[in-house]
Image (cartoon, rainbow, N blue to C red; front, side, top):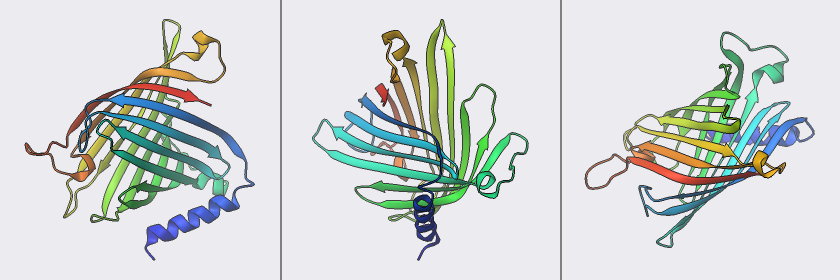
Length: 242
């Protein structure tokens, strides 16, 4: 059994065993995206994303499921689950040093119509002024259909106000190394969201905004004049938190 599969089996057991552990906070949301500059497939797509994130007494968990609907009739589902296990919480000892708030065992599984990939490594929660959260995760990727590689992921969330209006700027940067059968690739995706719920007088958070995705060598496919895989893609965004 590959070490990644063993780690995910252990992670599942830990999560099940921690079912009675405290959920410190959680959030469930639904996002709608519409864009016309996608690469690798139909350029015109709509994406529906169901997303759940939680902080627990053992660490944190992030998962999402994308349903993509292309104008040419193609349909696709893609999901990720990323549980991380806090060494500080599990040991009862502080892991703080410098700008690092905590050190975590970082795991992730990627699931699509075509492949399942496992990631494992180390994560860091970082303390940066004004940011609600900042995370850096360093992974070994065990890929199903291509050679294994390495990945670094930076995640952030920055709330701010302009003229009394509430905004959120959040996103991630994924960088994955090259291997014998794929190019190094980078995905920078961020969302700029304007909070509508204070104006509408509702409790559930509702945002209107844009998502911008910038890919280099999307999916590890080298960009060339005959097949463009570098993507610069602006999407309309509506996000509702239940």
